[in-house]
Length: 432
RNA sequence: GUGAGCGUAGCUCAGAUGGUCAGAGCACCAGGUUGUGGCCCUGGUGGUCGGGGGUUCGAGUCCCCUCGCUCACCCCA
Figure 1 (cartoon, chains in turn orange, cyan):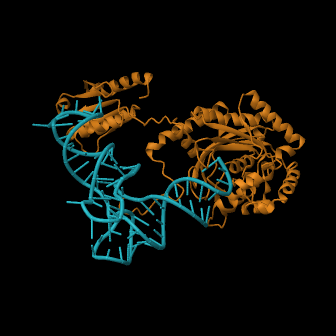
Figure 2 (cartoon, rainbow, N blue to C red; figure 1 turned 120 degrees about the horizontal axis):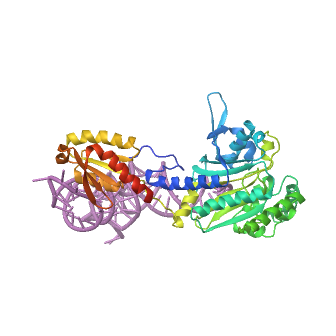
Figure 3 (tube, rainbow, N blue to C red; figure 1 turned 90 degrees about the vertical axis):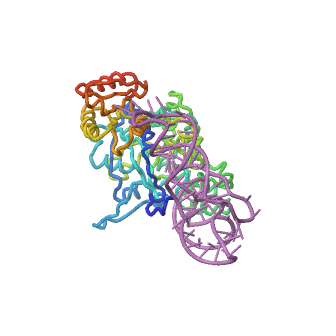
């Protein structure tokens, strides 16, 4: 460590340094491109909301609400919370602006930071970024499948191959009570053998026991009744519809009889995209239906389906699979002056070039020509304009093509036009 | 919150049993080309060895405490 570093990024957060940003641009670019193809419109909501929005929608007794929210009070004494999830704010906005009145089906997507106060580890941060999509208004299983297809398309476009789709159904308020009853009966006999955590879950949220990773609990629940076996007629029909359409689109999936989502608002379809390269936190994205949430939050009863995906995790998986195509940004022109007169001229030249739409940079360290050439090379400049004393005397400069290692003299009066032409031609071939 | 591992130059890391152990590679800067990049050669800047205390004639190297990071449990994106 250098000296003693007094200030650090808060635990569980990290700086995205310039080197890393091209990866993010690429990721966001692919997300926006695919969202457009599927006709989802971007929506941006505040990064904090009234606390109750989250506790009501996510569920009072979930891990997120119980211990992971960044909650604070503003000066008026209102309880606010940094969003741990993207869906509740979108739904709130949908209701608040009566967006459902405009069109019966609304398709949104968002990209942005989320906050959860957990112990950080691989693929888990306190401030992390998600992109997500929500389709509000359609009950058709085809809608669920479009959603899944969208997430998979994005993954595919990013080059991810070692991924798998897990599919399940968590039923609805009509079928869950029966399943719960059967599950409790099934587990009742071996209650004392369950881990302490699962014993708590037994009383509060028995579904989660199916999700326990302890070997013994897994064994005990091996043959436990799955919600899937207790779906009411409508839910069963819907689930069949989803599977049918997945088959139709030739989307492979693993039926996950114990897929449990950590958020209370999910109904029916639940899905997850898992990466084989991520370690313990292996879910790249997950989502499902939330047909009760809009009503729950005060809107008209409206069916909806959505997903959220973790961007840091996707980047991690991309790194592991070697599909990062990071190309550092480059500039069109580097201006390298020699001498005071040339330096003054360089400042104006840079302004003119920028006005002409040419990205460029110059020297502000009064470095040697050699050092400036090195900088030009590192910045990936296509051309370097060398403002030498001799040439300046004759109102001429040297323009060096860095890729072709050739240079020629150009008159000052036609310099900008010359560079525009050169870079314009180049632009048709590759990136500037 | 619990457990384990790790903290030596900007980065990646060497430094057996405590005594030239304060190093290498990369990066950065300069020179080799008194006006020219990428390769190469030479040289250089840079570290109170996370912090504090202790043991010792002497501690990156042992002990204690502390902070931080990482991974795992848990939970999830």
